[in-house]
Length: 194
Image (cartoon, rainbow, N blue to C red; front, side, top):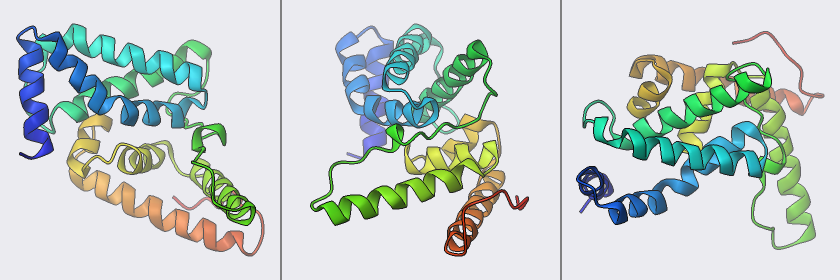
């Protein structure tokens, strides 16, 4: 049975009061929601708190969830996005500005010291390049790469149509490619391309 049908059955069970079904939803989706939040706030502790709030808020609103649009995963990411924006507002930081700190980009250890150094350098370059994208482009890249969401789901999360998401993704990837190619010629700087 496809994953989305399994998730649908779990959501329906949870909506009828089966908390163990909601626990399975939590187990299935926690890591991806956490990664999405962590890549934005850059702090493991803050990401854990926000992610816990996402799942608690979703549980409280679960009776109101209806199967329409892009589905439950997109609904959950939308809650996560709103909670991250609220987090930034409370701290006076510009909403939607993705942190993508080096801590948030941690990867499992590489096999050799050379591999680790190369991998760290590549992540740092990507980190700097992503920071130069527009807020919407950053969100599309995060939701696509971290959340593995479809363009339709991303559109539902960021309140844009699927065509706009495709355009944002295309421009973001083209801009990243240009920025990373230009990195060979010198440090990354804002070019004004968007």
